[in-house]
Length: 304
Image 1 (spheres, rainbow, N blue to C red):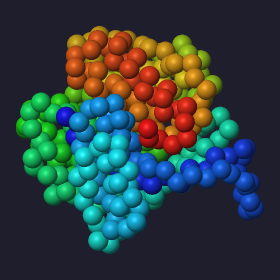
Image 2 (image 1 turned 135 degrees about the vertical axis):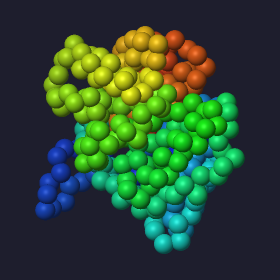
Image 3 (image 1 turned 135 degrees about the horizontal axis):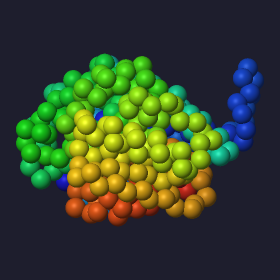
Image 4 (image 1 turned 90 degrees about the vertical axis):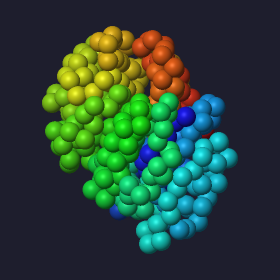
């Protein structure tokens, strides 16, 4: 069973034909969809048949109630705390013609996720805790994230943390973040996040495949001093891993027509984690993660 702790959001996705024209209208194709890194991963896990419980905090509002209904329809068991004051989290997602996205989030009730929102009976041997890094990066929810990691370790669960986003990560600082995740079994990060945490230069969008892979290799080796296994998600260049035994692997991304990259990393985690938990070799686990990510990017939105 997977216990996923983190953000639940509503995504307002605006598909743009070109650059935003500031100060005037920019026509777009707008959809309202479920989002939030943790909720997305939970949705893909459940969609693929893995028993999954999502722990998050929502507002006492229409969005929160609709979100629960949607996730339950996908097979997710929802352990959602209801905030009597704060609204449910919302994120405006701007998607360019190339499928790349810019996120403008209002975390709302997510910022108040508290240790008492984590039911004690969720933590048991044989289960896996997956924590969204957003929980640690927000002051108001950090104690909930740290409590989840501590309780999972005490109960003999395996643990993973997905870093989440390089913007708030850079505001927090690498040393602080690494102090919170030291000892987790798996750390998942994209190329920019991994480079930042490892103290490497910011990757450039036009870096060639060899440069991208070299950066991922150095970052993973550096971060392995703090965690068991490091997975670096490389977008169109696939993914790279160095595991707790020192084994390394790289798997190429699948050639697909990209529509929307929102939630691709969340879907990758939902493909990679069950493979890793079942003892799959590094290459096989990466390939399953890449397949899951490929499904996500060929559709609008972050969920199945």
